[in-house]
Amino acid sequence: MENQKLTTEELTSIRTLMTEFNKLKMRLGDVELERSKTVKKIDLLQEQYFKLEQELAKKYGSDTRVNIETGEVVQVPAEKDATSEAPNLTVEK
Image 1: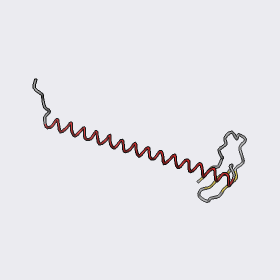
Image 2: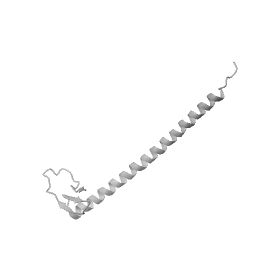
Image 3: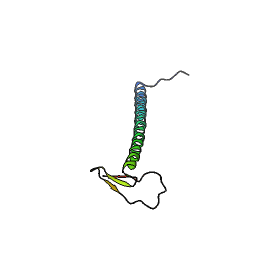
């Protein structure tokens, strides 16, 4: 049996589809890398926020509310249920 060959049109079509498929896979990989970088940045920001929150709680008290527009710090009455060791410092806009 003799080998058969695709027509020029068939070969062009399959090459075009494979090229587009590969481009999309690469783009998806780029998106996933960017997502991973973003998640790492978010994790870092959360760590920085928690550290600052701890510092502010030590300075102003653990049961305070901070208005980020004015910088005003207000004492908030402590709740009876103190099961968490994390400060109850809240930030409001």
